[in-house]
Image (cartoon, rainbow, N blue to C red; front, top):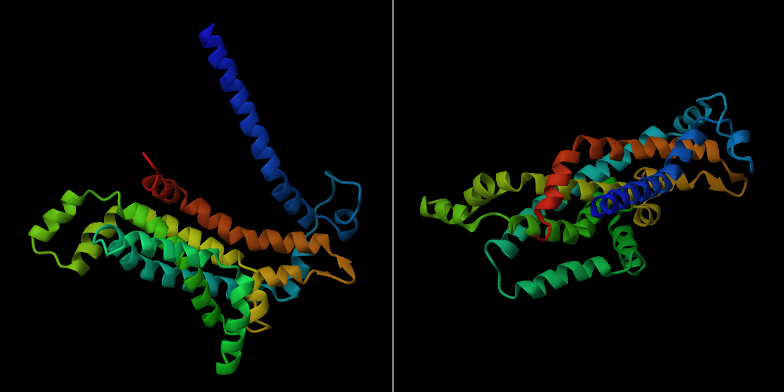
Length: 274
């Protein structure tokens, strides 16, 4: 009886899991399908599942210069990820292995900066960048993204660094390892999956950011999210081309997550509460 009950619960759990997966995956599937539809079918109130695929939406998206926006997004996301990771490694090291004074206050300050609404800081940033002539600059936008993602990256990496056995670090110190060698040769190889996970999260946040990219750029440094918003205007919603462009924009993140899935799972599990 107990065995049959457990089997029934397992079957119900599996069924519920598949239902949730389908519910969350269906909008993505519908976006991909709409990208291959003619505009008349994509905008129709009657959903169509069987149709002759066309690539008109993808062609229109590329004709509107999407390649340049993708390049800006890639530049901003990669640069900001490098900045946040390079700054987060020594910060997380100091907050975990070589404890600074009042570490709880430092951690609270780090994460509190992430709670600030973007609307509260965008006007000062806009005025500063306008005054010094740095508006519509992709590298300035990348620096802002790096600073914005730094608190989350530090918190994630600190949880990974805390998993490093302190006996290994003590042995390295006995052998005469300095701080730099201790970080680079001892600690980082042990937490490399965690660093990869934090870097991927930072990359995704920067790639998907819309608000700052919309207000701090105009043309030269505009990224993909504001470009996608340009397909909805007073003339209507161009769902086919918008779906095609959104599918293209989602591919880099999906590919990066698929390639780094093992490191991501292992890295996130390193910081789990045991």
